[in-house]
Length: 104
Length: 244
Image (cartoon, rainbow over all chains, first blue to last red; front, side, top):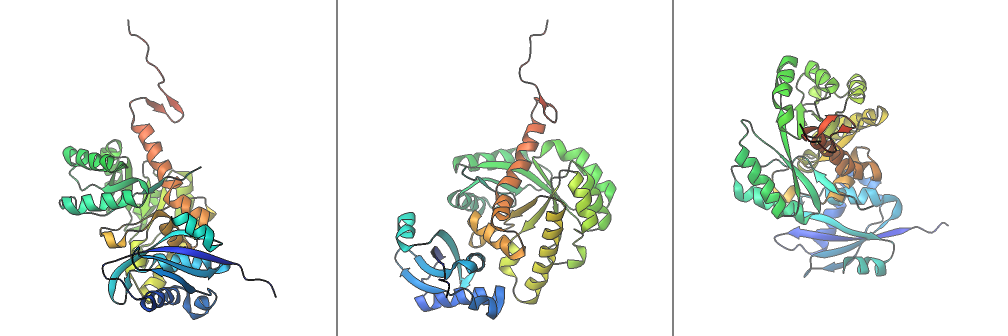
């Protein structure tokens, strides 16, 4: 079986009240589902890697083929659990090591 | 080469100075090098100077822009005759097909915009694109409706945008992606705007061009034309000799 290539995304969270990890990843799933449907969302292989509440930086992982889908969906987020929010993509990388070096 | 990003459509009430300043600061923080806010007519020079100064202070460039909704073709030509040499960017919002066709073939128009929610008034079809490809006009797409709409209205909007962008690509009409926002919470990083453009059919490179190269080309071209040294496209006064 062919190895699935992945990408790590560092996201900057912008909101007044910090959502929980669960609320955040649910909002990402919800955004992907709204824009691309359930079939589209199932191809993303999304998972939450790290949630830094203090710096409001979140790292998520997705498959390379769905990278554009995830980036578009993340940019379309306007609220998280009913409160105004925005999510910006800070960096994208193939390894966590490079990603961390990028956002330092 | 590092890209320089531009947002040609920040919709802010210029009377609210605090909100305007906040939006300008945020645009600078997000990495935009050039922004434009539509000026409401009649033009007040001090208002324009103030905006330019605010942008300069924030480390950005400001392009003067005016939006116009002409009712007839005559309205449009009259407006262009009067204001073309006073603004760096002119955007025409087309409410009728006649106006859309006239705007597409007029080389004095920079941006064509269509009502976001009224799908019957989106006249960017193949005929329009063919006319636009022979002039210097670009198609402007605001991302704000994509952020605020949900469900069927967003689906319909994406459908229209995807069709229009495909037609624009076919006829090599440049697409400019602007935010069209007036509130800070809807502002996005330039690269996020390019990502949003992926939803209506612009690939990564075209999306980035739509927020960097295409708007910058329009502003630079018009600045050159508006400068006192401009003679004709490609000809400008390099040095003036002494008059005897």
